[in-house]
Structures are given as structure tokens and as C-alpha cells.
Amino acid sequence: MASNKPPRTQPRVPKGFRDLTAEDVVARRRMIERVCQVYEAYGFQPLETPAIEYLDVLGKYLPEADQPDGGVFSWRYDDDEWVALRYDLTAPLSRYVAQNFQELGTPFRRYQTGPVWRQEKPGPGRFREFTQLDIDIVGAGGVLADAEVACVIADALEALGVPRGSYQVRMNHRKVLDGLLERAQVPPERQVRVLRALDKLDRVGPEGVRDLLGPGRTDPSGDVMEGAGLEPAQADVLLELLGAPEGARAGYLEVVRRLVADTTAGAAGLADMEELDRILDERGVGTDRVVFSASIVRGLAYYTGPVVEVALTFEVDGEAGRQPFGSVAGGGRYDGLVGRFLGQQVPATGASIGVDRLLAALKALGKLPELAGRCPVLVTTIDAGLRREYQAWAAELRAAGIPTELYVGSGGVAKQFKYADRRGFTVAVVAGGDEHAKGEVSVKDLRQGHELSRGITDRSAWLADLPGQVSVPRADLVATVRQFLDRYPAG
Image (tube, rainbow, N blue to C red; front, side, top):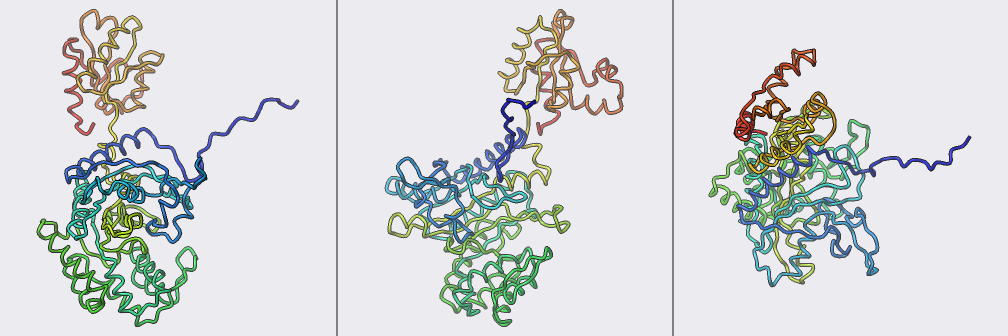
């Protein structure tokens, strides 16, 4: 007999999107808070812009893409104009600055974090919705502003516990690349393909880049990658710059000086990088933090000056074995973006952290637990007659600044401790009628108890012994809980 019941709706997440667990949400929030503290220490101010913008306002300015307007989520709005979900935070910033240019004054420093959306092919670790955390300085044309961006990003990483030696802030200059293309006599129609080949140095190595500059190559997966069709002598010029040493900024400058100083664009880029090197030296920022790298190629139609990419150099397991973690942030100077609204050039520079990418890096470094944290204390409710007291204890602990959950489910002590185990609480407050009659409460160190219980196979013995537990006078509740929590400063 056929059922008349309507089919059940299947729970599913749209392709390219995902859910986040409580641990990830809290860790992300705390990570962003730490980074924003560094930003504010440098004088950056927060800004929030809408999730949607008019499509023509967003424009064709998505970094590292040829046709950004083809990769946005767009629709016709109620005023019959086309709007789209923002694909980054910089295009909305440029609109905001243009609208408020006279009132803002320059330089204008802002930071912003929030989700962005791109209608691109999803893949492992690549989603259509992701979070960015940006800083930008608008209205400052000198490289002192570019140095500021590099330094604040380095300080932010260290504030998150990423040690020196595990990251590099890598900088290059768009005009140095233009000078290199001129020196190698690369025709305009091949320049985009050439720069993309240079950008693949970390992934395919020098010989792989040489193939991409020439006839092309077939990668290990069997995909054929078309080459730029350059002559070997042209490829030699390009690869010579890629071979510039990154360990010392002076080595990069020496190679750039030899290769492109006699070109108009190259000379301008070299002068900026030399000045940038002097500024970093004045700040005491060495090559253990900021290096110059000729292989950094970003936003071919977007960036106009110094560009920056932040790479984490510690190794993780990848498809090809152990390999560096890779990029977590990038940016650079984009002097043409705000000016398209105002009809005059407005210099700007900035960088964007990929929040989820950086969060994955912190997890790989073992920094995620201290960021994630959790509600550390559970007040159990094993005696219905003490409901008023349980609520008062939880409120008292919260008033003392200790995050505390009151158990509101059903079930006895076994179920409540199973819940505590699953949720990962650090401390449990336990009391029944006998303890209450004596004016006492029991405080249980769940972490210590977990360690001591590893050899116990009989749950009744575990509940009888309650390892890591002490009974104290009611007045000592807060002090005892705080003493237990202080054993685990990471939370």
C-alpha cells in the first residue's frame, strides 16, 4: 500500500559550504580577537561594510583572477540594479572611502573581518564562503606604509604563538616584475602566462617553471599545462631573478639591480625595495621575519607596487609527503582602486589574512587548544531538592569571572559525568543532600580524574573512588575551583 506521507527533506549542505563546530567557532573568534589587538596597537580602526554591494561597485578587481565578475553570487535587487555578495573586503572599502573621502582624512587605517563569497569550483580546503581579516592604509603613497603592513602581520602571527623561523613575510614589487618582462622582451600577449609560470616556483621547482615558460609540461596527475612559448634565452633571464637568494634581502636587491635597473619600471621598483629594506633595518626587522622574494606574483591587474605574501614554513604531511604549510595571507599596494570612483589616484596598501587557512595552521602547530578554550566548569544537578542551591553556585562562579554551565538535562550522576567527559569540562561541582547538610561541596578535577581513570575498567569503582575530588566548605567554592583551573593555564 503506497504511503501518503510526503517524502522527508534530506538534511544537506550546499556544495562549497560547510558547518563549523563549537570548537572551531570559539577558536576562530579568539584568534581574530588576538590579531585585532595587534592591529589596534598600530592604530588601525574597525570598519564593517555590507555583505552585498552593487555589481558595478565591486568591479573587475578581484586579485589573482581574470574575470572576477564571473565568480560572484549576484542577483537583481529590488531597485532593479544588479547586486552581488562581496568577494573580498577591499572593494567595499574602496567604495566606503570614496563616499566619505573628505570626512575621513588620510592616511586612513582600517581593519575588518567577515565572510566573503566566491562562486568558484570548490575543492579540498577550498570553499565558496570563507572569512577574511584585512588591514589597509589608504592615502599613504610611500613605502613606509608598505613596511607597516608587513610588520603588523608579522607581529600578529607571533601574538598567535607562531614562532620566528616558522613563518616568512615575503615581499616583491610589481614594477620589478614589469622590468623583468621588459628585459626578457616578453610580448604583452604572453605576460600573464609568464607571470603565472613564475608564481608556480614553490609547486613545480625551477625546472618546472622553465618548462612552463617554454613548451609547457605535464604534471604528475597527467594534466597538460600549456607553456608561454618563450625562447631559452628569455627563460634564462626570468629564472635568474627567481634564483635571487631569499635569506638576505641584500642578495635580492643585488640581482634585481643587475637585471632590471636599466628599465624604467624596474628602476622604480628597485628604488622602492631599497627604501623598504632601509626602513625594515631601522625597525630592527631582520630576515628572520621579512624577506624579499622574486617569486611572489600577485594580482596581475590589481597591484601596482610592493606585494606581500605570508608563508608558514613549518612542514606538514601533504599529497607529496612532508612539505611547508604554505601561504596564509597576502596583499600589496593597489593605487588604482579607490581612484576609479573619484577620478584621481588615491594610494592604498594592505593585506588580507585567510582566517580559516590560518586556523588550520595553528591546529597543525598545536596552538588550537589554547585558542579554542571551552566552558571549564560544570555544576551537576544530582539532587532535585537542591535546585535553588545549584543555580546559586553557578551564578556565583560566573560572577567571579569563571565560565560555568549548569547541567539542565535529566539523569543521575553517571549520566552527568559521562556528559562532562564528552564535553571536556575541566572541573565539576558535585553535591547531594549529605554534603549540603554539612555545608560542603565537592569539587572534582576532571582532567586529573581522566588520567587516573585510564587503568580503571569498572565504572562503579570509578564512581566510588572519584579520583581528583575534594570536599570543601561552601564558602570556599570559588577559591577551590579557581585553584583547580590554575593547574591548566591554557584553559
